[in-house]
Image (cartoon, rainbow, N blue to C red; front, side, top):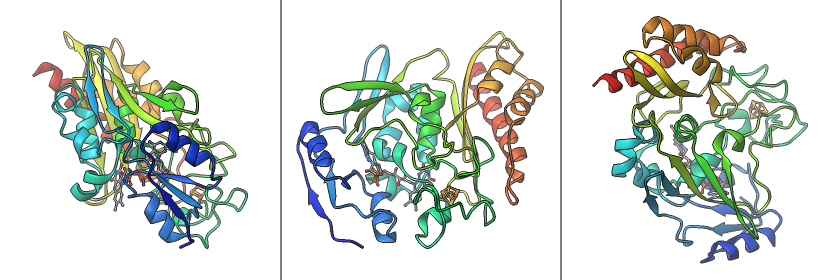
Length: 329
Ligand SMILES: Cc1cc2nc3c(=O)[nH]c(=O)nc-3n(C[C@H](O)[C@H](O)[C@H](O)COP(=O)(O)OP(=O)(O)OC[C@H]3O[C@@H](n4cnc5c(N)ncnc54)[C@H](O)[C@@H]3O)c2cc1C
Ligand code: SF4
């Protein structure tokens, strides 16, 4: 591990200025991802800027939305009464991730920015375009069972690992980002970018940008939302395929729905094709399966992960069935 210095600012402005004055500096939130990467040599910052003392841990509610401070822990968000009641898919997604100990320190902002679990990304001796642009992608011809089937490129096939981000995508959350002068808002779907030729670029953040909050709008469908996650073991494991769905069903017909997928794509994957296939349809398993087929039509499997295509369809159908049942209950 390289030598680095540590600072503990008490205002967001001070944090941003400190980060910008050290070119290789990184923000430190819960540290559950960034400290791993320090130990593995994946990152070698000159400075860690601790952002746990900026007062960003509040969760506030009003008639339009719920706003989660970027420093709120995953546990605080998952067990918040308003989130459990009005945004159940989000609470379920958070509780489906990591372990209670990790969730007690991991933060909302850090969760959105955690890095891929691709083995080759975490092994500094392997070729990896994401860690070292231009070095190649060891996963393309290597062990790629857990890798993506949607949104891949010849440069990178890594999945985005966050469960929370998948639920937030289905719930159309808005990210509040502070720079040196203003706070701007970015819808989560526009926040994550497609890998293309530069897999190191994962989102629209600029150097120094600090996520300060995540706002989730109240909608007619958010209260009828579910998160279903398939994984190799039932806890403490990342998704092989997951789906967050929110549906507004009226007299058996789907008036509106939002669907996002995890564990299968290079970013939290908004399932627009499936949504379009469902609106106006009867809420039946046949319609759910047709929507899943539509979304996965563009999936591209690697040598070892072809099973994810069928798995993802089944996870989508299960999540849609459960969410539609909530509406009837
Ligand atoms: C064993 C294990 C199992 C796990 N299983 C799961 C799982 O099943 N599902 C899942 O979703 N996650 C899982 N995780 C990941 C875990 O949820 C993340 O490590 C955690 O959410 C990251 O949050 P943090 O606050 O610790 O981030 P940190 O490690 O502190 O930071 C992560 C990154 O975000 C940056 N950052 C943090 N906050 C901000 C901010 N406000 N603005 C700008 N940049 C910021 C940091 O600079 C760093 O680059 C697992 C982790 C471990 C170790
Ligand atoms: S899939 Fe992406 S993260 Fe994994 S080795 Fe290839 S370039 Fe690196």
